[in-house]
Amino acid sequence: MSDLTLRFKGQKNDVVQGVNLRVRRGEVLCVVGESGCGKSVTSMAIMGLLPPNSAQISSGKMRISSDEWDLVTDRLPAELRGNKIAMIFQEPMTSLNPAFRIGNQIAEVVQRHQGGTRAASLDRAEEMLQRVGIANPGQRLREYPHQLSGGMRQRVMIAMALANEPQILIADEPTTALDVTIQAQILDLIADLRDETGMGTIMITHDLGVVAEIADTVAVMYGGQVVEQGPVEEVFRNPQHPYTIGLMSAMPRLDKPGERLAIVPGTVPTISNMPDGCRFRTRCAFATSYCSKRPSLSDIAPDHSVACHYAPLEAHVRVSA
Ligand SMILES: Nc1ncnc2c1ncn2[C@@H]1O[C@H](COP(=O)(O)OP(=O)(O)O)[C@@H](O)[C@H]1O
Ligand code: SF4
Ligand SMILES: [Mg+2]
Image (tube, rainbow, N blue to C red; front, side):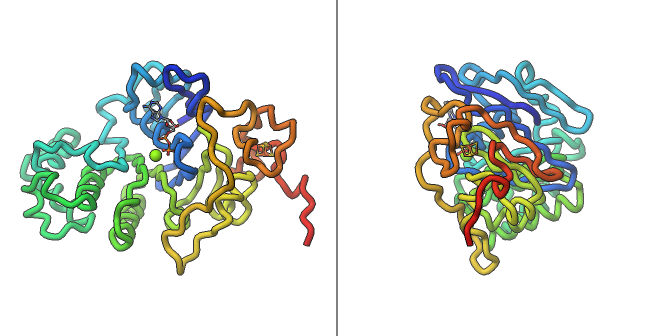
């Protein structure tokens, strides 16, 4: 996805500005950043799910292998949704219909994209429920969403999203509400499908433990912009944007799973109060008057890019021992 810029009607600033995200086959890209920085809006824009009367997309292009479309004029083609590209939401009821049995809902999606018999689609639904760790899947197939716990509904939605082996999966904080064991099982399932089918995943998460476990590359967002992007080992070992450095100051540790992003002092300005230039400058310890000019995302190493006038920092800041 390239150069996504959009704002909501009535706002004077873009809520997402010039965002590029790229995920290769068989890779997991994790998108991190504080709440409100535009992660969900970005994924909804990719899926064509923003309300067209209030969300105004001024630029953005999407490409999946040879399929390309302009997000300004076109929505995600229906034949690709749920097939080539699937999404898992924070809130499972967004994609479950309360009026239908869950087996029928999953089977319907499978049959729509893959054809085959009803019985074969129901078998696939049962297999997927098993893979997301639901006990007695044959029985659960006949239940309605309200008969399941929240965590189970979340897993049903994940099963439904993965049933057609999409080329791209967008997962918006999919495991936040799940307990640690189930969370690990879902991450394993995503990793298995990546290996089996070459699925590329864009995973939005607050959890650096998840990033450390599953990401190949990471994109850090602040104020609707990508401020740093690169291979996960490189960004963890050598974070260069002052915001990333703040977030990473609580590094994930294998003995402490589920460690969240560190708190960066101050709060994110609201969209209408976003400063010009570098949007992080109201909170940045390194800010100068030059930062009223917007920094572009530039490479500081192969595949590692940073949007800061002073990156790499060690070239500008003397660190005393
Ligand atoms: N439908 C909407 N109308 C107006 N503003 C919205 C809408 N949806 C999200 N926003 C605003 O867009 C910004 C980014 O939100 P979001 O993408 O949900 O953040 P994140 O997922 O990173 O926590 C927030 O300031 C939010 O209030
Ligand atoms: S451009 Fe300036 S304000 Fe922005 S992160 Fe870099 S030093 Fe801080
Ligand atoms: Mg969100």
